[in-house]
Amino acid sequence: MTVSAPFLATTTAQLDRFLADNQPAKGRRAVVMTMGALHEGHLELVRAAKEAATQVIVTIFVNPLQFGPGEDYEAYPRTLEADLALLTEAGVDAVFAPSPQEMYPDTRPLVTVSAGHIGTVLEGAIRPGHFDGMLTVVLKLLNLTRPDLAFFGQKDAQQLLLIQRMVKDFNLGVKICPVPIVRQEDGLALSSRNSYLSQEERETALTLSRALTAAQLAAQRGATAGQARAVAAQVIEQIAGLTLDYLVVVDPQTIAQADEDYRGSALTLIAARVGSTRLIDNMPVEIAP
Ligand code: AMP
Image 1 (cartoon, rainbow, N blue to C red):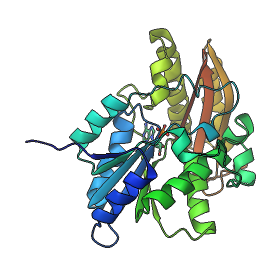
Image 2: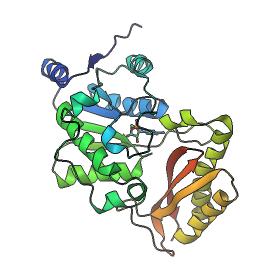
Image 3: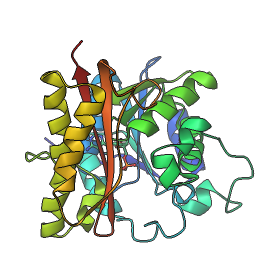
Image 4: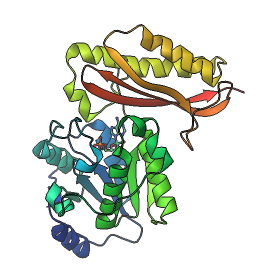
């Protein structure tokens, strides 16, 4: 079977032309936003989008606004050619891969989105301004691609919640579709940043999903939120070479930390540094009544 390459737009004018010339049936345009260095996690979003929509646009943009000083903006892997090959195989209709100048002609936008309180806790506490920058680019990309559906991974749980809130709070009229985390067989959540890990660091990084699984199992056996968290913390404590940023059991609707004796549906969130690589992961926990 021959597959044709997606339309590649690097400017907003080119994207506009594609959108004007290719109107899908009503309600049927989907967007998948990425920073590139694509892996199976991204491709799962594309597959879900293709199933739900007749036209799929993938954006590839390493957004400078969401990186803080000293973070990996410059080092972040940029693999456009390989990404385009994967997206050709995946059968997407268009790729929007703008330059930073195209997205931010004035270097930084004067007006940005504020993520509010949720933007200042957990990831937001460690990466100040990250979620404001992320929401600003998501809003821009939604306005540029004008989709009916937008697919985001549950891997970035706090990001997903904030996007859902922005869409609701600003009446953006796009349906946000969450996609479960894709993992490797041994449990490691796929991430473009995994390419930074040495073989030894990758072993260490497995602790994140092991700790989350331990919390999940403890909850199934009757542990409260506090007890499930403690079980996960024990798994982490035994491991050298891993610096924990946070490990929390939260209410998935608000990302507020669950009380020690909370029972019900919750989410365990973890963030840690392995060497100089920062990794995040999460897993649902059903705390039995
Ligand atoms: P990124 O390129 O890291 O900004 O991610 C782009 C989108 O892919 C976001 O919606 C992520 O949540 C999603 N994503 C990244 N890794 C995974 C994964 N392992 N499983 C599911 N979705 C993912």
